[in-house]
Amino acid sequence: LVVPMGGTISGTSGLIALDGWGVEEMAVKKKVALHLWWPGHGLSLPNPTAASKPKSIEEQSKERKSRIHEIDEFFDQAEAYRNARKAKIANFSKIPGWEAMLPVLDREIPLMIHADDARQIKAAVEWAIDRNYRYVLSGGRDAWKLADWLAEKKTSVIYRHIFRAPSQRNQAHDRQYRAPAILAEAGIPLSIGLPLGAWSAANQRNLPYHVAQAMAYGLPREKALASITLEPAKLMGVDNRLGSLEIGKDATFLSCSGDLFDLRTSVKHLILAGQEVDLESRHTRLYQRYDNRPVPQLK
Image (tube, rainbow, N blue to C red):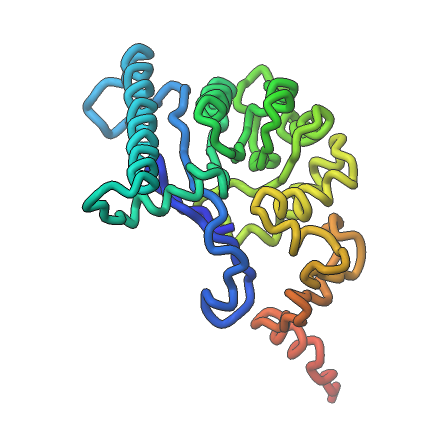
């Protein structure tokens, strides 16, 4: 999933396969979700190079309420555009920016809300439910604190903080390791992802080891495997094609030398939509070159 960064409402993302000639071949689904970065509740740390004083709790609260008001106003305008479009009023002209909002307003694709703090998560989920939007919670650092409540609200969670230090000093060192098991036990549809931002794409190769860490701390193997296969496919609306090996679905799978969640395992074959992907790279070529070097002749 390509996730746009920057701003409060950062845009719509698409789902791609990591093989193919250009977007036409690589795109699995062009519009998957609209991304909303919910305003936080944490204290702002002062910038040591700035001359201004850190903001007080009251100032931060006022700023947060202002940002939420801006979000409400943005979605109100989007809904007004949709209503005007449906009413076919005279001199109506399409606006690309508002057109991009229609799949979310019509519940065709979900709103992916990025939130981590417990208060932030609760506020965001209540807001989405009040507006009757399809939504997915992404990030979810403190989601374990609200596990039963999130399950009651039928909230799907993409958890991205397994290898992250606890957010509070009084929390156990393994709190984030155990969080996926807590969410799964509550009955929450769980997907596991990596933290977003710098180097996120390059680190995707380590995703199985994040899941393995959660397995070591209570996440059942079946749910662990589903968290990086079937559950993400359901969230993206492509579970009719991907996420499990069934008749009628795309033949997209991999084979490896051992347990997928074992650090010592190597991927041997990768099949995307029935076509084998060449796994050769500069690293494999160098390995083969030096593995096949001639034995030195002693004189």
